[in-house]
Each structure stands twice: as C-alpha cells, then as structure tokens.
Length: 278
Image (cartoon, rainbow, N blue to C red; front, side, top):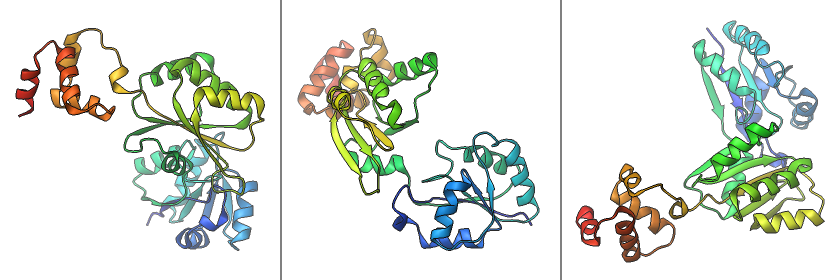
C-alpha cells in the first residue's frame, strides 16, 4: 500500500503555535522532507522529534520529488515542512503535491500557521476577496508586467518581501498603483512583531529614514471598481445591472446615487435601472 504525504504547517515565529497533531505526525512519519534541514533541526530538537530528514528545496524539487514518490510507493509516510508556515504556498512543495496527485498518492494537510492569512486578518483591509502574489519577480520586465496587472486589481493584494528589497518594492508599488492604503506586517508572531497601517506614500517616506529589519508581509487595498475606466458604454453590458449597482455600493455610495451612476454609465434612464432590479 502506498504511503501518505502529509503537508505539515509549522510556526512562522512563535514555537507555541505548533499544534499537537503536527508534532505527532512529525514523530510518526518515516521521513520528514524539509526545505532547509539546518533550520528545521532546531524545530525538531525543540519538540524532541527524532524522525530522519531529507532535504527538499527549490534547486532539487524535481529530481528529489521523484525519489520521494518512490519512497511513498514503497509504503513510507512522508511529512513535508517548509522553513516556516504552510508548505506548498510560494514553496517547492507545490511540485511534490502535483506529482503525488499524478501518481495516485494520497495527500493530506495539517492546517496551521500561514503568514499571508495572518497578515490579512490583522490588516484592517477587506478580506472577503484577496489575491496573493508572493515575492515580486526580480526580472525587470516580468516585474513591470505584474505591477501593470495589479494596477486594476480590485481585490486586496498580499505580497511577501525581504528587508533588503523593501524600499525598492514600496517605491515601485507607489509608482504603479498610486497612493493606496497598505498595512505593513513585520516579524509576525515574533517578539518584535509590528503591524503598521499606513499608505504607500507614507511608507516610502518612513523607510527612507528607517532601516528595514525582519521579514515583511504587505497587504494593499485593491483599486476601487468605480475608478476603473471602461472604453465605452457597451463594455458595461458584460456585467449585469445588479453587479454594476453593487460595485458602487461596495465603494460606499448610497443606493439612490449608485442607481443614478449606473444609468449614466450605461446610457439608460434610472427607470430602466429600477425595472431591471425588480
């Protein structure tokens, strides 16, 4: 019988966030596949876990995945962990999961810490709809393409950033997105955790005078739908009048004013809008 791949979330800072089930699974697994064994041994030693580790990281994720698949096919259970947080999120574990699914091997997850979710829920920004972009690309052409896409993104945007790239990233975001609300989350769950609701313009000024330290998660307000410019009235026909109306209400407009704006956008009367909503 094939073994099982367990995706085990580990703390992003505070070791007290480790779950009892995660500890038990790491103890009982045959192999722990770890992104950085030098980092993970500290976690295992803290909880007295003696399970052997196998290095699985960005530079060996394809060849090593094949080896791990063969071990799973031989009936061994493998626990996959990342340096911190949930494996498979902006992480080489994505490849191993895909290969397991292709091979018919069972994959299950042990939920726990995830930096992007932790940042989102403390940000004070809309959380019903959001998108995650991980780290912006280093390649200038690819980076510009992503930033251009984000200009019209209406969902809350979440990015990761390292301290030595933070200033450049904040300036790029301000240049492409304009001044937006942003919550800058630093060292989440750790001793010097800092949650800073601010704006892109203010954050650029702040970090011009203050040295970035620690790991960052950036949570940025999406563009308001009502600010998006459509080329002509015909493009509004791609969405229903109900959705069109809700767009303005979500932006804080009262229903009466929103109905007036919908009529103007579509070149119809307010009576036509009212009838469509009945």
